[in-house]
Length: 59
Image 1 (tube, rainbow, N blue to C red):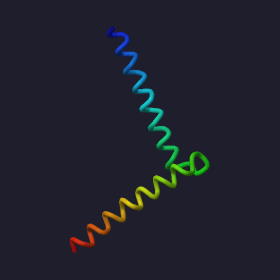
Image 2 (spheres, rainbow, N blue to C red; image 1 turned 90 degrees about the vertical axis):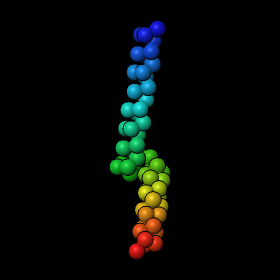
Image 3 (spheres, rainbow, N blue to C red; image 1 turned 45 degrees about the vertical axis):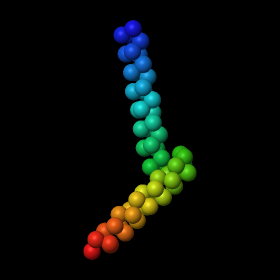
């Protein structure tokens, strides 16, 4: 039982690492997965915009 659980954890960790690699690729390489890069840029742009508006309201 314990061995099975350990294997399961290892698999989970592997998947997380792969996800992280994919994310990094999305930021930096233009050729690899361009759409995700665009989505990331749009997301951060919107986030920055919200912050900017909030800051402007405070002043």
